[in-house]
Length: 84
Ligand SMILES: [Zn+2]
Image 1 (cartoon, rainbow, N blue to C red):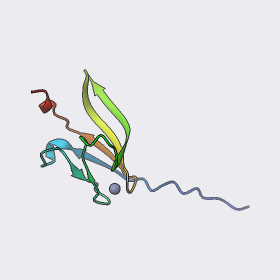
Image 2 (image 1 turned 60 degrees about the vertical axis):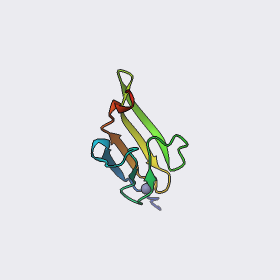
Image 3 (image 1 turned 90 degrees about the vertical axis):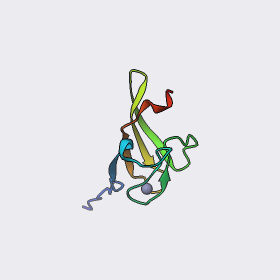
């Protein structure tokens, strides 16, 4: 009996707190492959949105997958600074 070990895609999970990201547009690099990811980039070329968590109409958490390595990245620390 051959045991097929189903190899799940390597789970890679990171959490990015935007409050600690020091770039104007909140862009950061994938902790794994270094792809530049900007939450403001709505083309989703570099990432794929997996899940969003909204509280009181405000985005509090964004779960994305790096478009290059597939690493899951949880983005927290959104600040309603655009609500000027
Ligand atoms: Zn990556």
